[in-house]
Length: 613
Image: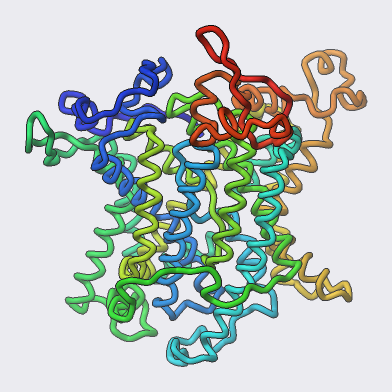
């Protein structure tokens, strides 16, 4: 992720953030801001006024809203919940609640950077692959709205047994992430995972979902086109247009200030306007009333009963759908998603540290962050969200817009997520979004995710025919092989049912196929250096294999350079209350890869004991 130049949250002549100096807390120990964080209104260790924390926390919730709502809605059809909007609202509320818990864990005990956690698209592809197995395909009657009685025990068991299976495999696969994080294995794995592995893996999270996005948008292409147009208009053409907004300050009381509204809330504004348009067309009967007619799914009254049925308060709890079940095939598929999520999160840690003016995270912080994300996935599985959690890149980008890098703002965002997860009506409201509006949002969102994956190639020499082959072959096979396997599942019969299911899930998970081929080819195909090119010995010399320059690993390692164990790094990334640095500093803890290094006080300064990880 690159750091872009953004205008201030509010214009400089009347900036709400910078005008609150009297309410802003002082730096700890009286330290001035570092040069790298001088552009921030609030640094990572600062505590803004409580009301500003709440407002910015709500903004982070709204920024993540698209991804939080999208994952349950994508899974709904394969969970046999296509015509049960009330249960969809329960899944959305559960996702809100679990994301709040995981955000608080990550900020307080994990990597300790201001990073919000939410549902991950890395688990969507393997989840859909598992649910496409013959044993888990939805019965035909669940796809017909006229035959579905959402309150019947038979229907309830149909969708609950599928989500219980998802719960079980997510909980088992998350143990892999916990192990990789807290054992320190991530440092070893990153020696072999470079941009040519990451690019196809992340791109193939989104590219195979064009079926889902196209089908939803196709229920009314006119409404979907309006949604797309508005998102593009707000996020690209009007992003630098400031809108006068009423602001209350201690000095000037009630006054107006210019706010970059379109840049901060492009998806939310587009969604609300398109939703309102659908409501107007429904009230005026401009949309067809027959359920089988084209455009019926754009009506806002098709799911109107959800709001009345949903309770005002509903507290999600572990095991709310029953006892989780486990199958080996699902575990292998979700594990592939776990690895992809780990790689993506590490990139997010470095990007976030750069944006908030913090030193690059040291190894113990990265190990702890990945381990806590694994714990978050374990909790997400136990609560029955149908998904795991990961770091949200879009919220990291919001840090550069608001110029607020304070941890306390993300703590407030975590609390907002918890509250939103308990209010049942809020989840129900998002479950009533018309289908073509969701489809338009998906087309934009999935396109951006695919482009983010491809952007990792900026570190690679794309003038190299080797690299062009590795990426092109990996991403094309990542689309072709799963498509063939889905159409010819009978060709994978080995005589062992469990093994057949493992092959079926792995080979129909696009990002696993593409990521595995990228990993294999990138680490085995020889790459030439300038010296070997001049000697014309590249094809046969083993020492030329895997040139860091050509593979992009040299630039990659420079960008992901480990932080020096300075006093500032210790203050930011250590556990709260001095745990590990002032307390619990046993000599045995230095062998724990996730434990902060103890402080040794010298004359007028403090240094951090350097120990191997």
